[in-house]
Length: 243
Image (cartoon, rainbow, N blue to C red):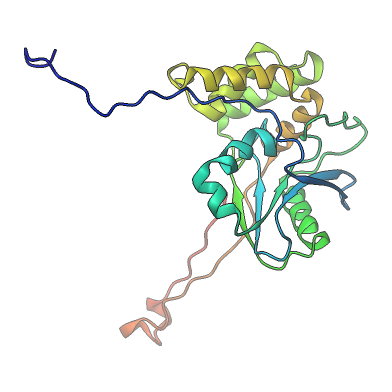
């Protein structure tokens, strides 16, 4: 009832809820293991004709290419776009499905090293130009820094605890993740509990926690702007930190 009157709904079609899962599409990708100068290997999932323009992805914390990007690239509109590219999904070391435990004696790459590893992958696969898609590990604030230290300890000593799962759900779905699509949240909750390699994630999470500002200084001058053209006193240089 609306305003005391009956309202007839027309042209409303029922649809079955999406069958969401994080299972890898077997045979959809060619997977290559590339050994790097950082002492670790990375698994790259490749789909498409290498002669086409390259599209390269890097996943978020606690995920890999399957859990982060597969559903997105299977979306009908994205399929149409992706067909015009050769897609390269880069997994961070030890984060791929079925990954072996990285030895405690192996130093895990820091954030700068991971960027260099991506560059090594690009060189190894002879990619000249590419479009990059990264969800972004981001930079932790002080509160998150504290949670991360606890999470690393839990992952190393107890595996994926409830506290770790709660943190990952917050990281990906926000504070009120209970109000999100329940089926999707439950799928990821199950994934975090059973499908990730906790000791490897602890190594990545630790480096994420230790990351520093990217050391890029960029100078910008207004010496050619109008009346300031040749007056140094009216020109300035702008330096910025990129995180």
